[in-house]
Image (cartoon, rainbow, N blue to C red; front, side, top):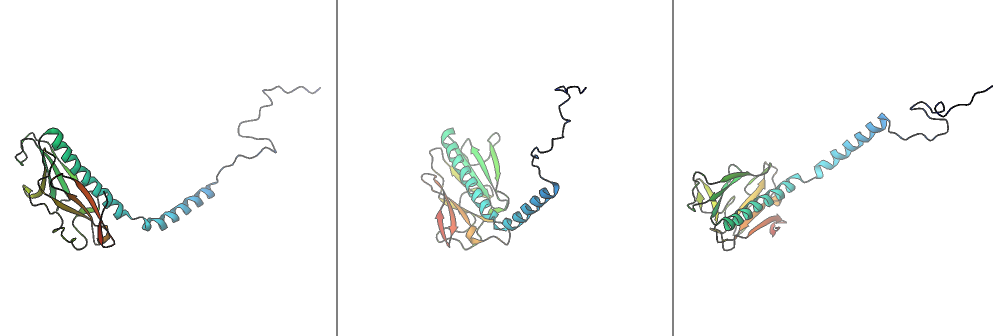
Length: 203
């Protein structure tokens, strides 16, 4: 006499399936290696087309402009001057809160260095723009050994001027030159980029 199969006994072992059930889809090792190889080839072809230098310079000019605008706001809000010195050989700027307005860094006065992004330095790859002055920085005031600009507590700047940014190395192209301008009366900060041989406002 055939005994009946209980529910517990009818359960199949884990990992086995009955004939006729649809197989679960999975990638084999060969398929995975093929996909990774194809992605690697596509990346190798596309990498030279990505204009890294342009992105770096755009980021750098935005970063410097932001620091200058923040210095101007700090001068107005705190009621004392803020001096931004430009170290063109070190590719960095120094932001100094001049609490006693004597243009010298005194003990207890906060200051910081801001480095230019990797692959970017002060200067021009091409000829100086007409009327733009001599690169890399046109500000005449100095703080110590560096050219500098002072943002006053009334919202103005000590002088009008430009600073220029370019890519590093022999591959730096004039088309990638960037500039930051400061207006004296309002301390307005404007970004410029070189396009097709002329300069265009970009921020």
